[in-house]
Structures are given as C-alpha cells and as structure tokens.
Length: 194
Image: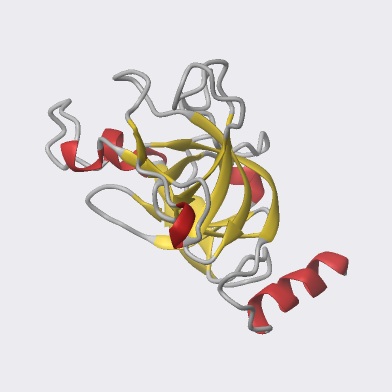
C-alpha cells in the first residue's frame, strides 16, 4: 500500500523542476544511442552520439564542459542512477577507473535524461526468455500494457524514473515507449549474459 501511495504522490502532485528526488540506485549504462541507434545493421556506430556531456551541477553557473567517450568499442560505462532533478539524472560511475580524470576523487555527475540505457530482459524463470516484455502505461503492474517488446529490440533509452520503474523508449526501427518494471531491467552494459 505504501508503494501505491508513493506512486500516487509522484504522479499527481506537482513538484518544482528543481526538486531533487532520490531513486533506488538503479543500474544503467552510458552511450546507448552510440552503439545501438544505427538502422543499417552494418556494424557501424552512430557518431552523433559519441560524446556524452557531464555536468558537475545542474545550475548554469557550475556547468562543466566535460565530455566522455565510450571506454571501448564494445559498450558504454556502467553507472548507477542515484537521483533525478528536472531534465537530469544524478549518476555515479560504477567503474574502477575514473572516466573523467586519473586523479578525480568524486565520481558523481549529472547527465541529461535520454542519454542512459538499459537492456530489457525477461528474468522470470517460469516463462521463456524469448517471450515479449510488457511496457506499461503507468509505473504499476496493474496499469494497462501499452505494448510488448520483442527480445530482438532489447536496448532502451531511459527517459524518466519513478521509484524503481523506468520510462523507456526502445532503440531501432520500431521505437516504442512505456514504463518498464524493475524485474525486466538489466543495467549491465554488456547485457544479461555477463
């Protein structure tokens, strides 16, 4: 009952844009559009999404001109989303090496929403891993299912978060948008088999 009350408050009570909201340390990865947005299926990367801008703070006076590139030509960085504020997610890097500088101590930054990704995967052992994954109209299992995502269309961009639910949009030829339940999220940049 407590969860439904929190979802109600998050959905229906207006909050100022600058209000910081904690989220439950959700795993995700950077550069999803760089690796997965090309329509050509030719193994090429989308250069439009090569650099990811990081911010020290979301106030304009403290904006950093820091950009990071993917750590390899396999995947983006592993990160933890620790909060959201306005059009930004507050993240910390989940990497041994600091992606910005060798001697940096703080690894907490802001990144604009729509620049982080998750794999959509069926972790339910009672059904086939190849079954379609539902995306919901609202962040609740009792909400209407908008569509189902095929396993072949399994990388999505994270647009927003409420509690541990992610509003996602799939990448590829058939883009669909909806709320992804926590049991179907995989934030490991290498996917579910690692």
